[in-house]
Structure formats: C-alpha cells, structure tokens
Length: 304
Image 1: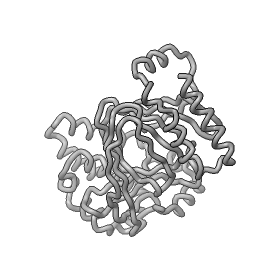
Image 2: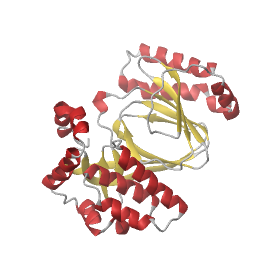
Image 3: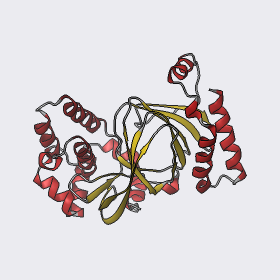
Image 4: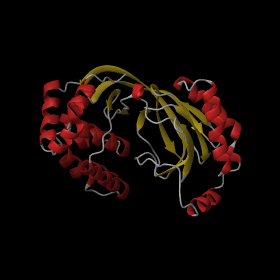
C-alpha cells in the first residue's frame, strides 16, 4: 500500500504549505485524491491479502461508521481510512471534521440536505425544516469535499456490496462540535439529535433492524413497546430515525402521541428535561462521568 503512504505524505506537505488551516484541507485532500487516481489500481483481493499479512497497523479508532473501517495512514493532524460498506444506507448526518472522500469501489446515491432550525427543544434535540438540496449518483472515482458542521449535511445509499470509500480527514474538531444526526419521520418537520451510544438501546435498534430485514410480524408490537418503555428524548429520536429508514408507516407504528410530539414540535422543555432526568437517575454513574462541565457545555449547544 505504498501509494496510500505517498498520498498521505503529499497531503501533509501541501497542507503544511498552507499553515495547516482547517479550511484548506478539504480542497487539498480532494485534489490529492483526484490526482492519485487510486480507483484505477485498487484491487480488493490484493488489499485484503496485504491486510491479512500485517502484524501492525497505524493507530486505529473504533466507532460505528461503516461496517469495516481501517486507518491506513496516520499523521499528527489527519489520517486516511478505508471504509467498507455492506449496509445500504447511512443516516442523514453532518461531520465534526474536515477532509474529503473518494469512491474506490461500488456506487452510491448521494443526497445533500439543508436544515433550518426552528426550535431547540432540549440541548440534544432540535426541530426544524429538513429539505433535500441535491441528489446525485457517485460512481468509482467520484470525489467530494467534507466541510464540518452544517456546511455538509448528507446521506448515502450504497448500491453495491461492498462499496468502498477512501476518506482523508482530521480528528474531531472542537469548533465543529457537536455532531448532529437528522431525520424527518413525520413529514417536512425534521428532527436533529446528538447520537449517543447507549448499549441497551443500541441492542434494541439492532433488533428492530433485524425484525425489519426478516419481515417479522413482531416488529409492530416491538416498536410500540419500545416507545412506551423509553423515558429519554434522545433515545426516542434515535428509534424514530431507525423506524423511518426501515418502514414507510413508522409514524403509525410509533403511536399518535410520538408522531404528534415530533411533527408539531410541542414537546415542553420541562417534560423533556423530566424524561432525561429520570433516565439519568437510573444511570447515576453515567451522569457522574459526564460531569457538570459537560452538562453546561451541552446546555449552550445549538443546532448550528
């Protein structure tokens, strides 16, 4: 994978010439990816053979983005990773980092969105107008810039299995935090929320996905029971994201109260705070880890 190392060194030199300004990296990375034309020589079998023989790798981060992410170049200011996708679709999301990505294998339907904030219901839940801005087909060799924050809100539907993207990116940028996910399960009114990893609820989301894929009739009572048993506003939003991606009638299955609450943006702030407080009370250790400074930071965050 010598060409990936050469790509990383080239980007590092060009970015150094620009004083490592964060705003400069997307253009530099996109130009370097286009010049390298790695899509013309990338071979999946050859790459997997190389990977299988490695006894050490660049420092790896472990997250939920893609089915198999692998960092192949690491510097102190950015890294390069390969993302292998077997699931068809991503959530509508923005990024808290800067960079660029290029399609190495497969193709994807790429949708860009806009979000106009209308009301901040909770430090971690907003509602507003979510609208499609651009729709395009990305094929092998296509390269796109990644600007942090609301400058790029997008989603991808991967058409081949696997699809592979090559990403050049910074670590998370404090200036671009928080990172939001979006959904519009009940019409034009969109919901923005900060994704969090709760082990119990993530298992419920995975179960929902499994039930939908298997065509199980148990999915309807499972959604209703999960909504009824969810006291946390963020978890409810995450459930509705999953349901809206999998099912056309998610609002009916989630129940009229959930649909009305999201679509009309009438969740009282005190009610949401109360629901979140009850959830935090059941997990006091998690509350202590967040600490008062984190809560204060979140209280000042907005969907912007």
